[in-house]
Length: 565
Image (cartoon, rainbow, N blue to C red):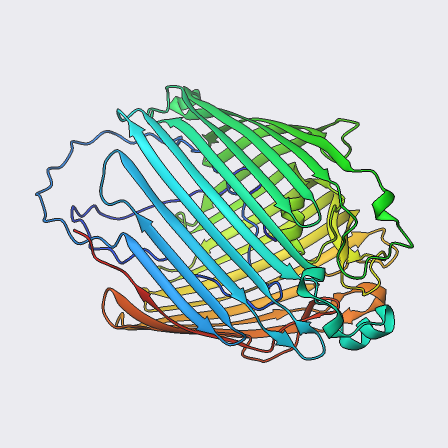
């Protein structure tokens, strides 16, 4: 699900070994490959990592060494730009553009542009168009080697169709044919503009005060008079201190305020099939208000007897779920890690928690067929986690994780009864206890061959009338292989399995299986050609009831970069 990283705590340690070689390596071009998916949300196999965007100071302080003199080397050509263009069946164009400034000790700036869309038609379902365009301007400036200033400005335009109804359903329910309706009757459009700005000091001495501050402002305006304004203010301070036996600890404080202002005032035009007899929306008052979430997270990182401790707590004020009330919540934030077998095995145990806002921008990314003015709540969760990472050899690594979560107001979806075509969803919030067990293994052979295999098992215990959450699989599996032949031919192959899911009206969605592949030929360092193939099993799968996918997608294109001295 598409969401910004939750504010949780990094619970892994990283050990880097190797001798220093004073040579500036020649690097490959920077790429930001576009991901072109089918008209349905594509299942991606991911682990749940707890990653914090805040800087963490090492609690180990190595002895100082004398700086080595490095002989000057001629500057190499830089590839500070990247262009990727392609076109596929169902009239599916894609475009990727990346450009940034070249070498500079003080400043960096650039632009990213991405577009992907599809203009296909499904038998019996008509047009199933979708499109996404994203533009970002970014920059960073370092002041006197003491402060880092950064900012970015992003604009996103997203549109899709509520196409989940057949010709027969349209005729029997509304007495209309396809020629009697227009795409605008069931087309949802979203526009989001976001500005981020941050400042942090460049103080590397762990025994001096470090700090950072960030502001994010975003505004979403969408079809059917939906608007959501978000202001996020966050900041961090940290300070190192001595402990027993000359050990070092670092104390942190993270604070965040997330404020939302929303309005929804439909003018009588609603998505096709809305039943005004059940709910006369034109007579309903406009919906507007504000919601807030405040978080404080003090914690300490230190090492004792070979154990790495992360100890703290998170206090949360939830004024998001019910704007008329503010709920105070206290969440644990404790993780203990230990390295074994000469650092080859790292195990960790954690007890953490937090609250996450399910706002309109997030909800529509999870389910693009959600109703306008969807109900918003914050999900509260407490998590017990065990994780192990085993470096079996230089080429082989395995990960395993078990997580038990107790959730309040967990989010899923069901068909909205106000829409007669059964093609629009509404959010369902429920209390849930979830057990997740997952593992993966990766083999990497000098970047020439990479193999990965993994999967998850999910168990949910709820009090829902239908016993289990809708549109949640019980398990998933994935396998992938990447081959780099002489740095000329690049091959990627992946397979995915997604277990059966329970849909609406006691419908069981069949197991989803998929095979995706990509081949790229590098003509030279500047020019390459690629062929991307999705859903090679040609399965007409359903991720949401009444929304079938296209059977296969093929994109043919090229990439180009222009060298710059």
